[in-house]
Length: 254
Image (cartoon, rainbow, N blue to C red):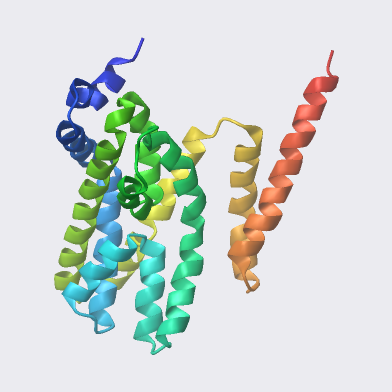
């Protein structure tokens, strides 16, 4: 028996049309805390782009084409410091590789036996931390044939919030305190971390979060190169080992 909240989340999508499912996605996005997170994060990006001499149309275009705040910050700061465009493109690509496993998990949830590849292009492009969390949480309550339209509605709602943040940040540049603008960039990673910890169900997940929270600042403080890579490799391997030991102990217990 589906819960009332799940039924409400699906709404008109259960009745059938892709248009109603898209509207449901927009409505779900407007109710999500990630709307505030994205608006704040992209407000900071708009101010950063203004300070480094980029135009507002360029900033909005980069938001639409990238839709990943960390990668966009890398693009703006590298190009703003006269880094060759090819090097900036490689840095953005390496930053965005983290989203590939998310898309691999999400797209099978959206597709049907008759779904064409081109129908998955928009959900794949807009796969980001916020979109991934909310779509995985809400899409299972929507009939499978309407899930792509529902996901596109969520993406459109989040993209609208991001663009609004860009515009506000661009025009407020120089007015808002710099520490506040910088702090807003941390809204996305902190919201993702809190959401991921709340959803953790396995010992390996919990161990990975604890190890990462301990290792990351230590490696950053020690100026270790590729600290994020080492945190993922060493911390993830250690978390997997801890979870495996826990399973073996449970099996040995009478």
